[in-house]
Image (cartoon, rainbow, N blue to C red; front, side):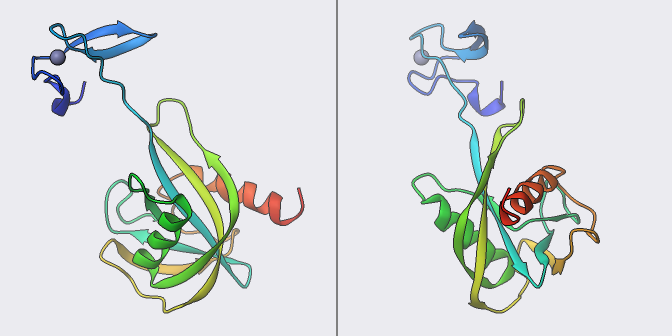
Length: 165
Ligand SMILES: [Zn+2]
C-alpha cells in the first residue's frame, strides 16, 4: 500500500493489508475502516488546425521530453469540460471551446482514466507554459515521439467520429 496510507484516516491506528471485496486493501484492525482507492480522471483535448493536431512536449513526469495531447488532471468538484479547456490554456496559451466527448479511455491496472474531447480554437496565442517544453501542430502521419501510447487510440476514435463512423 502507498506510504501515505500506513495509518487509518479515522483513528490513526496502523493499517494492515487484507483481502476485501476481491483484492488486497488497507484495513484498520482497530475500527474496521477499509481504504478504497478511487480512479483519477484526466481530461485531454484534440484541437485541430488544418488537418493537424495540437501536441505538447511535456515538461514534467511521466513522459518528460515526450509529446502528448494537451490535458491534465480534473480537480475534485471541477466540471470536466472546464478542466479540459483550462489545461489547454495552461499548457498552450490557446483558448478553446469544447465540441464533444470523443470517448472515455481506461485500462486494467492503470489508475488514470482519460476523458477525451474535441475542441475548437477560439483565441489566445501559442505560448509554452511552466509544464510545457515545446508545442506544435502535427499531422497524424508525422507525429513526434509519444509519451502515452493511449493517445493513438484517442485520435483513432476521433477520426472515426469525424469521418462519420
Ligand atoms: Zn481505524
